Amino acid sequence: MKLPVLILSFLLLLSTTTYAHNITRILAQHSDFSIFNHYLTTTHLAAEINRRRTITVCAVDNAAMNDLLSKHFSLYTIKKILSLHIFADYFGSNKLHQITKGSTTISSLFQATGEAAGTSGYVKITGMKGGKVGFSPVDSDSDQPMATYVKSIEEFPYNISVIQISHILSTVAPTDVLNLTSLMAKQGCKAFSDLITAQGADETFTQSIKLGGLTIFCPSDDTLKSFMPRYKNLTADGKTSLLLYHSVPVYNSLGMLRSSYGLMNTLATEGANKFNFTVQNDGEDVKIESKLVRATIKGTLVDEDPLAVYKIDKVLLPTGVVCCCCY
Image (cartoon, rainbow, N blue to C red; front, side, top):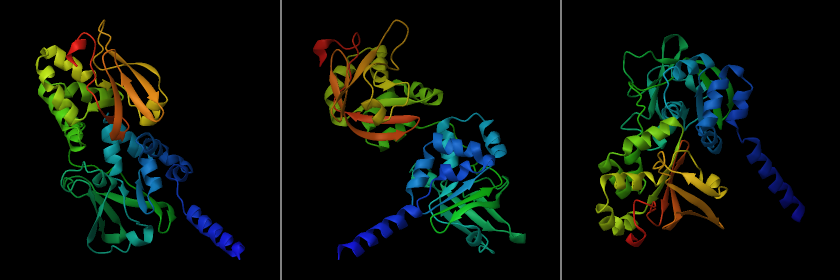
């Protein structure tokens, strides 16, 4: 009696794995899309595509990607632009060419991030004369040429459709400035982000992201509230150093931190001023230790290369900025 049950379980497992898709492997078979494929991996969009059950990817060829890269956008902005090319619905060739008159609007992964302002994360798919299909961001400039459907690359109804479009989809003026403090505030790090803005240190944080990455350790709002009387007594330079001390000028996922031991340079390190701290692990816990305090990571607020933001339970204190008796 148990044998039919085992066979049924095997068939169910086989059916779920058969339809699993891997965008990296799909595009690896088409050399004309190698750059697009590379940046899907680099921006971690490939993992997001693979985990979704129903998805459409609008790929562009190497020439179109080279045109995008010539604008020297940061990785953050490239991710934002490419996420506009990924739809949370299935649009194979047949479905696209059924839009003979009028248009339909679809949500992209950029909209799903919550960072898209207004309608900037939506794409309009339009049926055109002669059987052509056009794609344009809802908030795009009317003077911008509409991207058009070129061909189907791979289709696995109704899980994933990978199609080629003629050129990059982009809004009127894609910003290359990450509103870091706004993002932190939305993710539960408002008190610390407000201090960064008030001290004028936000540009230093943003520049680090553009240059390669950033990891921020954000004290919880309650922790920072109790520390504010001491913070207000610091000099202007001391306040800036303390804020910068809570960040490392490289991206570190939680897994990377768990495998890291020893000293890390912080953004506060400059010349002879070696403002470092030590990363240590206690089981699954990751601890950040200076000579004055030991903090524990209590949660992940943002973890998207090139930026990671973690919530910690104490304010990190750099030696020489805050005296040992101040905490």
